[in-house]
Amino acid sequence: MDTRYYLAVDIGASSGRHMLSHMENGKMVLEEIYRFPNGMTEKAGHKVWDVDRLFEEILTGMKKCLEMGKIPYSMGIDTWAVDFVLLDENDKMLGDAVAYRDDRTKDIDKAVYQFVSETELYTRTGIQKQSFNTIYQLMAVKKQNWKLFTNAKTMLMIPDYFHFLLTGRKAQEYTNATTTQLIKAKTKDWDYQLIEKLGYPQDLFLEIKSPGYELGDLSNVIQEKVGFNCKVILPPTHDTASAVMAIPTQADDALYISSGTWSLMGTELKEADCSAGSRKCNLTNEGGYDYRFRYLKNIMGLWMIQSVKKEIAQDTSFAQICEMAAKENIKSVVDANADRFLAPDNMTEEVKKACSESGQQIPQSVAEVAAVIYNSLAKCYAGTAQEIEELTGKKYSHIHVVGGGANAAYLNELTAKETGMTVYAGPGEATAIGNIASQMIAAEELYDLKAARQCIFDSFEIKEYCPD
Ligand code: LFR
Image 1 (tube, rainbow, N blue to C red):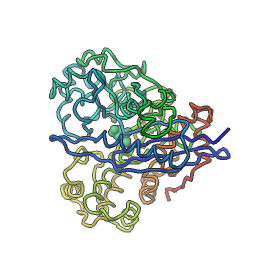
Image 2 (cartoon, helix red, strand yellow):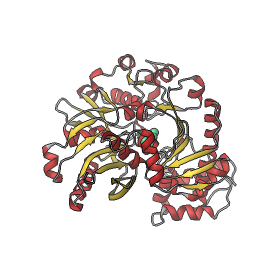
Image 3 (cartoon, protein in one colour):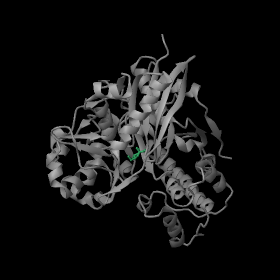
Protein backbone atom coordinates (compact mmCIF):
# COMPACT_ATOMS: atom_id res chain seq x y z
CA MET A 1 0.00 0.00 0.00
CA ASP A 2 1.27 3.50 -0.81
CA THR A 3 1.90 5.75 2.17
CA ARG A 4 -1.39 7.21 3.32
CA TYR A 5 -1.28 10.70 4.71
CA TYR A 6 -3.85 12.04 7.13
CA LEU A 7 -4.35 15.73 7.81
CA ALA A 8 -5.46 17.15 11.15
CA VAL A 9 -6.36 20.82 11.29
CA ASP A 10 -6.27 21.73 14.96
CA ILE A 11 -7.37 25.24 15.83
CA GLY A 12 -7.02 26.57 19.34
CA ALA A 13 -7.89 29.92 20.85
CA SER A 14 -4.42 31.33 20.18
CA SER A 15 -3.20 29.45 17.09
CA GLY A 16 -4.05 26.83 14.51
CA ARG A 17 -1.91 24.19 12.85
CA HIS A 18 -2.01 21.67 10.03
CA MET A 19 -0.43 18.39 11.02
CA LEU A 20 0.21 15.69 8.48
CA SER A 21 0.71 12.15 9.65
CA HIS A 22 1.44 8.68 8.32
CA MET A 23 2.48 5.29 9.67
CA GLU A 24 6.06 4.13 9.45
CA ASN A 25 7.13 0.79 10.93
CA GLY A 26 4.08 0.73 13.16
CA LYS A 27 4.69 4.23 14.50
CA MET A 28 2.84 7.45 13.85
CA VAL A 29 4.98 10.09 12.17
CA LEU A 30 3.79 13.66 12.65
CA GLU A 31 4.80 16.71 10.68
CA GLU A 32 3.65 20.28 11.19
CA ILE A 33 3.19 21.78 7.75
CA TYR A 34 1.48 25.08 8.50
CA ARG A 35 0.75 27.27 11.50
CA PHE A 36 -1.30 30.44 11.83
CA PRO A 37 -2.34 32.79 14.62
CA ASN A 38 -5.82 32.94 16.11
CA GLY A 39 -7.38 35.24 18.67
CA MET A 40 -10.56 37.12 19.37
CA THR A 41 -11.20 40.43 17.64
CA GLU A 42 -13.54 43.21 18.70
CA LYS A 43 -16.53 43.83 16.46
CA ALA A 44 -19.59 45.92 17.21
CA GLY A 45 -18.85 45.77 20.92
CA HIS A 46 -18.37 42.01 21.00
CA LYS A 47 -15.45 39.60 21.11
CA VAL A 48 -15.69 37.53 17.93
CA TRP A 49 -13.76 34.91 15.98
CA ASP A 50 -12.84 35.83 12.43
CA VAL A 51 -14.11 32.59 10.91
CA ASP A 52 -13.69 33.83 7.33
CA ARG A 53 -9.99 34.37 7.86
CA LEU A 54 -9.67 31.07 9.70
CA PHE A 55 -11.25 29.28 6.75
CA GLU A 56 -8.78 30.96 4.37
CA GLU A 57 -5.97 29.74 6.65
CA ILE A 58 -7.41 26.22 6.51
CA LEU A 59 -7.24 26.34 2.71
CA THR A 60 -3.73 27.83 2.69
CA GLY A 61 -2.48 24.99 4.88
CA MET A 62 -4.20 22.43 2.64
CA LYS A 63 -2.38 23.85 -0.39
CA LYS A 64 0.92 23.04 1.37
CA CYS A 65 0.01 19.35 1.08
CA LEU A 66 -0.09 19.70 -2.69
CA GLU A 67 3.20 21.63 -2.76
CA MET A 68 4.83 18.86 -0.71
CA GLY A 69 3.35 16.12 -2.89
CA LYS A 70 1.65 14.61 0.17
CA ILE A 71 -2.03 14.56 -0.66
CA PRO A 72 -4.03 13.46 2.36
CA TYR A 73 -6.24 10.40 2.17
CA SER A 74 -8.54 12.10 4.66
CA MET A 75 -8.72 15.19 6.84
CA GLY A 76 -10.61 16.47 9.85
CA ILE A 77 -10.86 19.68 11.86
CA ASP A 78 -11.07 20.19 15.61
CA THR A 79 -11.40 23.43 17.58
CA TRP A 80 -12.34 24.64 21.02
CA ALA A 81 -15.94 23.96 22.07
CA VAL A 82 -19.23 25.73 22.82
CA ASP A 83 -19.06 28.38 20.07
CA PHE A 84 -21.22 28.20 16.97
CA VAL A 85 -22.56 30.00 13.94
CA LEU A 86 -26.18 30.36 12.91
CA LEU A 87 -27.14 29.93 9.27
CA ASP A 88 -30.14 31.36 7.43
CA GLU A 89 -32.44 29.53 5.02
CA ASN A 90 -29.79 29.81 2.29
CA ASP A 91 -27.06 28.46 4.58
CA LYS A 92 -25.44 31.87 4.84
CA MET A 93 -23.93 32.86 8.18
CA LEU A 94 -26.05 35.21 10.27
CA GLY A 95 -24.22 37.78 12.38
CA ASP A 96 -20.83 36.94 13.85
CA ALA A 97 -19.23 33.96 15.49
CA VAL A 98 -19.24 35.50 18.95
CA ALA A 99 -16.50 34.14 21.21
CA TYR A 100 -17.29 32.44 24.50
CA ARG A 101 -15.28 34.96 26.50
CA ASP A 102 -17.61 37.76 25.33
CA ASP A 103 -19.81 39.06 28.10
CA ARG A 104 -23.13 38.71 26.25
CA THR A 105 -23.96 35.80 28.57
CA LYS A 106 -23.54 37.85 31.75
CA ASP A 107 -26.53 37.10 34.02
CA ILE A 108 -28.19 35.09 31.24
CA ASP A 109 -28.21 32.01 33.46
CA LYS A 110 -31.22 33.46 35.26
CA ALA A 111 -33.17 33.55 32.00
CA VAL A 112 -32.35 29.87 31.41
CA TYR A 113 -33.37 28.91 34.97
CA GLN A 114 -36.81 30.36 34.37
CA PHE A 115 -37.41 27.38 32.12
CA VAL A 116 -35.33 24.71 33.82
CA SER A 117 -33.63 24.61 37.22
CA GLU A 118 -29.87 24.36 37.46
CA THR A 119 -30.14 21.01 39.23
CA GLU A 120 -32.45 19.54 36.62
CA LEU A 121 -30.17 20.82 33.87
CA TYR A 122 -27.23 18.96 35.37
CA THR A 123 -29.20 15.79 36.01
CA ARG A 124 -30.29 15.72 32.36
CA THR A 125 -27.07 16.74 30.64
CA GLY A 126 -24.26 16.09 33.13
CA ILE A 127 -22.56 19.24 31.86
CA GLN A 128 -20.98 21.61 34.34
CA LYS A 129 -22.16 25.16 34.57
CA GLN A 130 -20.03 27.50 32.53
CA SER A 131 -21.59 30.85 31.78
CA PHE A 132 -20.39 30.48 28.20
CA ASN A 133 -21.96 27.11 27.36
CA THR A 134 -23.95 27.18 24.12
CA ILE A 135 -27.22 26.89 26.03
CA TYR A 136 -26.57 30.31 27.60
CA GLN A 137 -25.17 31.82 24.41
CA LEU A 138 -28.33 30.82 22.53
CA MET A 139 -30.44 32.37 25.27
CA ALA A 140 -28.39 35.57 24.87
CA VAL A 141 -29.17 35.58 21.13
CA LYS A 142 -32.84 34.93 21.84
CA LYS A 143 -33.06 37.80 24.31
CA GLN A 144 -30.73 40.28 22.66
CA ASN A 145 -31.22 39.68 18.94
CA TRP A 146 -34.69 38.37 18.27
CA LYS A 147 -34.56 39.01 14.52
CA LEU A 148 -31.39 37.01 14.07
CA PHE A 149 -32.76 34.29 16.33
CA THR A 150 -35.92 33.88 14.26
CA ASN A 151 -34.05 33.95 10.96
CA ALA A 152 -31.73 31.16 12.07
CA LYS A 153 -32.45 27.83 10.42
CA THR A 154 -29.36 25.83 11.40
CA MET A 155 -26.84 25.94 14.20
CA LEU A 156 -23.38 24.61 13.44
CA MET A 157 -20.58 24.38 15.94
CA ILE A 158 -17.37 26.01 14.65
CA PRO A 159 -15.66 22.83 13.32
CA ASP A 160 -18.95 21.61 11.84
CA TYR A 161 -19.21 24.94 10.03
CA PHE A 162 -15.72 24.53 8.56
CA HIS A 163 -16.53 20.95 7.54
CA PHE A 164 -19.66 22.28 5.86
CA LEU A 165 -17.64 24.90 3.95
CA LEU A 166 -15.28 22.14 2.81
CA THR A 167 -17.88 19.62 1.69
CA GLY A 168 -21.23 21.38 1.38
CA ARG A 169 -22.60 18.87 3.92
CA LYS A 170 -23.97 19.76 7.31
CA ALA A 171 -23.61 17.47 10.30
CA GLN A 172 -23.32 17.79 14.03
CA GLU A 173 -20.47 15.89 15.62
CA TYR A 174 -21.20 14.26 18.97
CA THR A 175 -18.32 15.26 21.29
CA ASN A 176 -18.64 18.96 20.56
CA ALA A 177 -22.43 18.78 20.64
CA THR A 178 -22.29 17.66 24.26
CA THR A 179 -20.63 20.97 25.21
CA THR A 180 -23.78 22.82 24.19
CA GLN A 181 -25.38 21.47 27.40
CA LEU A 182 -28.35 20.45 25.27
CA ILE A 183 -27.53 16.75 24.91
CA LYS A 184 -29.08 14.20 27.21
CA ALA A 185 -26.36 12.18 28.95
CA LYS A 186 -28.52 9.01 28.95
CA THR A 187 -29.55 8.99 25.28
CA LYS A 188 -26.47 10.78 23.87
CA ASP A 189 -28.84 12.69 21.62
CA TRP A 190 -30.37 16.17 21.66
CA ASP A 191 -32.60 16.69 24.66
CA TYR A 192 -35.60 17.82 22.60
CA GLN A 193 -37.77 18.26 25.69
CA LEU A 194 -35.22 20.65 27.16
CA ILE A 195 -34.84 22.43 23.82
CA GLU A 196 -38.59 22.91 23.66
CA LYS A 197 -38.78 24.22 27.23
CA LEU A 198 -36.16 26.83 26.36
CA GLY A 199 -38.05 27.90 23.25
CA TYR A 200 -35.27 27.03 20.83
CA PRO A 201 -36.47 25.85 17.40
CA GLN A 202 -35.93 22.08 17.19
CA ASP A 203 -34.75 22.12 13.60
CA LEU A 204 -31.73 24.26 14.44
CA PHE A 205 -30.20 21.04 15.70
CA LEU A 206 -28.96 18.49 13.19
CA GLU A 207 -28.65 14.75 13.50
CA ILE A 208 -25.72 13.75 15.69
CA LYS A 209 -22.82 11.90 14.07
CA SER A 210 -20.08 10.05 15.90
CA PRO A 211 -16.37 10.69 15.38
CA GLY A 212 -15.17 8.55 12.50
CA TYR A 213 -18.20 9.40 10.37
CA GLU A 214 -17.33 9.99 6.73
CA LEU A 215 -18.89 13.31 5.79
CA GLY A 216 -17.90 13.15 2.13
CA ASP A 217 -15.42 14.51 -0.41
CA LEU A 218 -14.27 18.08 -0.75
CA SER A 219 -16.76 20.06 -2.83
CA ASN A 220 -15.80 20.87 -6.42
CA VAL A 221 -15.20 24.51 -5.55
CA ILE A 222 -12.78 23.59 -2.77
CA GLN A 223 -11.07 20.96 -4.93
CA GLU A 224 -10.39 23.67 -7.49
CA LYS A 225 -9.00 25.97 -4.83
CA VAL A 226 -6.64 23.51 -3.16
CA GLY A 227 -5.82 21.34 -6.15
CA PHE A 228 -6.81 17.94 -4.78
CA ASN A 229 -9.64 15.90 -3.35
CA CYS A 230 -9.76 13.91 -0.12
CA LYS A 231 -12.34 12.52 2.27
CA VAL A 232 -13.51 14.56 5.20
CA ILE A 233 -13.81 12.37 8.29
CA LEU A 234 -15.28 13.79 11.47
CA PRO A 235 -12.68 13.52 14.25
CA PRO A 236 -13.73 14.22 17.82
CA THR A 237 -14.22 17.83 16.76
CA HIS A 238 -13.96 19.15 20.31
CA ASP A 239 -10.19 19.61 20.74
CA THR A 240 -10.26 18.24 24.28
CA ALA A 241 -12.01 15.07 23.11
CA SER A 242 -9.28 14.59 20.50
CA ALA A 243 -6.60 15.21 23.13
CA VAL A 244 -8.15 12.67 25.50
CA MET A 245 -8.08 10.08 22.70
CA ALA A 246 -4.32 10.53 22.67
CA ILE A 247 -3.67 9.77 26.36
CA PRO A 248 -0.87 7.19 26.07
CA THR A 249 -2.35 4.59 28.41
CA GLN A 250 -4.05 1.20 28.30
CA ALA A 251 -5.96 1.90 31.51
CA ASP A 252 -9.67 2.69 31.22
CA ASP A 253 -9.59 5.07 34.15
CA ALA A 254 -6.40 7.10 33.89
CA LEU A 255 -6.18 10.55 35.42
CA TYR A 256 -5.22 13.19 32.87
CA ILE A 257 -4.77 16.89 32.26
CA SER A 258 -5.25 18.17 28.74
CA SER A 259 -3.11 21.25 29.14
CA GLY A 260 -3.45 24.17 26.77
CA THR A 261 -5.39 27.41 26.85
CA TRP A 262 -7.47 25.54 29.44
CA SER A 263 -6.36 22.77 31.75
CA LEU A 264 -8.96 20.03 31.54
CA MET A 265 -8.38 17.60 34.36
CA GLY A 266 -10.30 14.36 34.70
CA THR A 267 -10.77 10.72 33.89
CA GLU A 268 -13.01 8.62 31.64
CA LEU A 269 -16.30 7.04 32.68
CA LYS A 270 -18.47 4.51 30.89
CA GLU A 271 -21.61 6.11 32.37
CA ALA A 272 -22.07 9.80 33.11
CA ASP A 273 -22.06 10.75 36.78
CA CYS A 274 -24.82 13.37 37.08
CA SER A 275 -24.97 13.21 40.88
CA ALA A 276 -25.29 16.18 43.21
CA GLY A 277 -21.70 15.56 44.39
CA SER A 278 -20.34 15.94 40.87
CA ARG A 279 -22.44 19.01 40.27
CA LYS A 280 -21.24 20.68 43.44
CA CYS A 281 -17.62 20.09 42.44
CA ASN A 282 -18.44 21.44 38.98
CA LEU A 283 -17.28 18.30 37.23
CA THR A 284 -18.62 17.77 33.75
CA ASN A 285 -19.49 14.70 31.69
CA GLU A 286 -18.54 15.64 28.15
CA GLY A 287 -19.00 13.13 25.38
CA GLY A 288 -15.89 11.30 24.28
CA TYR A 289 -14.75 8.90 21.59
CA ASP A 290 -16.55 5.56 21.76
CA TYR A 291 -19.04 7.17 24.13
CA ARG A 292 -16.50 7.28 26.95
CA PHE A 293 -17.56 10.23 29.06
CA ARG A 294 -14.88 12.81 29.78
CA TYR A 295 -15.48 13.36 33.46
CA LEU A 296 -13.42 16.49 34.01
CA LYS A 297 -13.09 19.96 35.33
CA ASN A 298 -12.21 23.14 33.46
CA ILE A 299 -9.28 24.90 35.12
CA MET A 300 -8.27 28.32 33.81
CA GLY A 301 -4.99 26.96 32.39
CA LEU A 302 -2.28 28.52 30.29
CA TRP A 303 -4.64 31.25 29.11
CA MET A 304 -3.34 33.12 32.13
CA ILE A 305 0.26 32.80 30.93
CA GLN A 306 -0.74 33.50 27.30
CA SER A 307 -2.38 36.74 28.42
CA VAL A 308 0.60 37.85 30.51
CA LYS A 309 2.93 37.11 27.58
CA LYS A 310 0.79 39.25 25.29
CA GLU A 311 0.69 42.07 27.83
CA ILE A 312 4.24 42.32 29.10
CA ALA A 313 6.50 39.68 27.52
CA GLN A 314 5.79 39.54 23.81
CA ASP A 315 9.37 38.80 22.87
CA THR A 316 9.85 36.08 25.44
CA SER A 317 8.97 32.50 24.46
CA PHE A 318 6.73 30.31 26.62
CA ALA A 319 9.71 28.07 27.33
CA GLN A 320 11.72 31.07 28.54
CA ILE A 321 8.86 32.32 30.71
CA CYS A 322 8.62 28.89 32.28
CA GLU A 323 12.38 28.73 32.93
CA MET A 324 12.40 32.23 34.42
CA ALA A 325 9.50 31.39 36.73
CA ALA A 326 11.31 28.30 38.00
CA LYS A 327 14.03 30.53 39.45
CA GLU A 328 11.62 32.57 41.60
CA ASN A 329 10.53 31.63 45.07
CA ILE A 330 7.49 33.83 45.51
CA LYS A 331 4.85 31.84 47.41
CA SER A 332 1.67 33.80 46.58
CA VAL A 333 -1.19 31.86 45.02
CA VAL A 334 -4.52 32.92 43.52
CA ASP A 335 -7.69 30.94 42.85
CA ALA A 336 -6.96 29.96 39.26
CA ASN A 337 -10.62 29.09 38.81
CA ALA A 338 -12.07 32.42 39.81
CA ASP A 339 -14.29 34.08 37.21
CA ARG A 340 -12.18 37.22 37.41
CA PHE A 341 -9.49 35.50 35.30
CA LEU A 342 -11.86 34.48 32.48
CA ALA A 343 -11.53 37.70 30.49
CA PRO A 344 -9.94 40.46 32.60
CA ASP A 345 -8.94 43.71 30.91
CA ASN A 346 -5.40 43.01 32.03
CA MET A 347 -4.38 39.60 33.39
CA THR A 348 -1.09 40.79 34.91
CA GLU A 349 -2.88 43.46 36.90
CA GLU A 350 -5.66 41.08 37.89
CA VAL A 351 -3.16 38.58 39.32
CA LYS A 352 -1.40 41.37 41.21
CA LYS A 353 -4.72 42.65 42.51
CA ALA A 354 -5.78 39.20 43.70
CA CYS A 355 -2.48 38.82 45.59
CA SER A 356 -2.82 42.25 47.13
CA GLU A 357 -6.44 41.66 48.19
CA SER A 358 -5.46 38.44 49.95
CA GLY A 359 -2.54 40.11 51.72
CA GLN A 360 0.14 38.13 49.90
CA GLN A 361 3.35 39.25 48.24
CA ILE A 362 2.54 41.12 45.01
CA PRO A 363 4.50 39.76 42.04
CA GLN A 364 6.42 42.41 40.11
CA SER A 365 8.43 40.93 37.24
CA VAL A 366 7.17 38.71 34.41
CA ALA A 367 8.96 35.81 36.10
CA GLU A 368 7.22 36.44 39.41
CA VAL A 369 3.77 36.83 37.86
CA ALA A 370 4.33 33.59 35.91
CA ALA A 371 5.54 31.82 39.06
CA VAL A 372 2.35 32.81 40.88
CA ILE A 373 0.27 31.48 37.99
CA TYR A 374 2.13 28.14 37.73
CA ASN A 375 1.95 27.65 41.50
CA SER A 376 -1.75 28.47 41.51
CA LEU A 377 -2.46 26.05 38.67
CA ALA A 378 -0.56 23.24 40.40
CA LYS A 379 -2.51 23.88 43.62
CA CYS A 380 -5.74 23.77 41.68
CA TYR A 381 -4.71 20.46 40.05
CA ALA A 382 -4.04 18.97 43.49
CA GLY A 383 -7.45 20.03 44.79
CA THR A 384 -9.18 18.69 41.71
CA ALA A 385 -7.31 15.36 41.88
CA GLN A 386 -8.55 14.98 45.42
CA GLU A 387 -12.13 15.74 44.41
CA ILE A 388 -11.97 13.20 41.60
CA GLU A 389 -10.54 10.57 43.95
CA GLU A 390 -13.38 11.20 46.39
CA LEU A 391 -16.07 11.15 43.72
CA THR A 392 -14.82 8.04 41.89
CA GLY A 393 -13.64 6.23 45.01
CA LYS A 394 -10.32 5.55 43.28
CA LYS A 395 -6.72 6.34 44.19
CA TYR A 396 -4.41 7.55 41.47
CA SER A 397 -0.64 7.18 41.53
CA HIS A 398 0.05 9.14 38.36
CA ILE A 399 -1.28 11.78 35.98
CA HIS A 400 -0.90 12.03 32.23
CA VAL A 401 -0.34 15.59 31.07
CA VAL A 402 -0.90 16.03 27.33
CA GLY A 403 -1.08 19.05 25.04
CA GLY A 404 1.15 22.11 24.72
CA GLY A 405 1.36 22.52 28.50
CA ALA A 406 3.15 19.15 28.71
CA ASN A 407 6.24 21.09 27.59
CA ALA A 408 6.12 23.39 30.63
CA ALA A 409 8.71 21.52 32.70
CA TYR A 410 8.39 23.71 35.78
CA LEU A 411 4.62 23.31 35.84
CA ASN A 412 5.04 19.52 35.60
CA GLU A 413 7.46 19.57 38.54
CA LEU A 414 5.04 21.62 40.61
CA THR A 415 2.14 19.36 39.62
CA ALA A 416 4.05 16.27 40.76
CA LYS A 417 4.98 17.99 44.02
CA GLU A 418 1.51 19.33 44.82
CA THR A 419 -0.41 16.17 43.91
CA GLY A 420 2.16 13.70 45.20
CA MET A 421 1.69 11.78 41.94
CA THR A 422 4.11 10.92 39.15
CA VAL A 423 3.51 13.07 36.09
CA TYR A 424 3.89 11.55 32.63
CA ALA A 425 4.15 14.48 30.26
CA GLY A 426 3.44 14.09 26.56
CA PRO A 427 2.62 14.01 23.79
CA GLY A 428 2.53 17.77 23.35
CA GLU A 429 0.53 17.55 20.15
CA ALA A 430 -2.14 15.31 21.66
CA THR A 431 -5.05 17.13 20.05
CA ALA A 432 -3.77 16.70 16.50
CA ILE A 433 -2.68 13.14 17.29
CA GLY A 434 -6.13 12.19 18.59
CA ASN A 435 -7.74 13.79 15.56
CA ILE A 436 -5.46 11.74 13.28
CA ALA A 437 -5.94 8.55 15.30
CA SER A 438 -9.70 8.79 14.75
CA GLN A 439 -9.10 9.09 11.01
CA MET A 440 -6.68 6.15 11.04
CA ILE A 441 -9.26 4.01 12.86
CA ALA A 442 -11.88 5.03 10.29
CA ALA A 443 -9.48 4.01 7.52
CA GLU A 444 -8.77 0.72 9.35
CA GLU A 445 -5.11 1.53 9.67
CA LEU A 446 -5.51 1.31 13.44
CA TYR A 447 -7.85 -1.25 14.95
CA ASP A 448 -9.50 0.69 17.76
CA LEU A 449 -8.96 3.23 20.54
CA LYS A 450 -6.82 0.87 22.62
CA ALA A 451 -4.58 0.10 19.66
CA ALA A 452 -4.36 3.79 18.84
CA ARG A 453 -3.28 4.64 22.41
CA GLN A 454 -0.66 1.89 22.34
CA CYS A 455 0.64 3.22 19.03
CA ILE A 456 0.74 6.77 20.46
CA PHE A 457 2.67 5.49 23.49
CA ASP A 458 5.16 3.79 21.15
CA SER A 459 5.50 6.77 18.82
CA PHE A 460 6.01 9.85 20.98
CA GLU A 461 8.28 10.95 23.80
CA ILE A 462 6.81 10.90 27.29
CA LYS A 463 8.74 12.51 30.16
CA GLU A 464 8.47 11.43 33.77
CA TYR A 465 8.39 13.80 36.76
CA CYS A 466 8.47 12.26 40.22
CA PRO A 467 6.88 13.95 43.24
CA ASP A 468 10.20 14.14 45.08
C1 LFR B 1 -10.14 23.81 25.29
C2 LFR B 1 -11.64 23.94 25.30
C3 LFR B 1 -12.28 23.39 26.54
C4 LFR B 1 -13.57 24.14 26.54
C5 LFR B 1 -13.08 25.51 26.20
C6 LFR B 1 -14.08 26.43 25.60
O1 LFR B 1 -9.59 24.36 24.14
O2 LFR B 1 -12.19 23.30 24.18
O3 LFR B 1 -12.46 22.00 26.55
O4 LFR B 1 -14.27 24.09 27.74
O5 LFR B 1 -12.01 25.30 25.28
O6 LFR B 1 -14.55 25.95 24.40
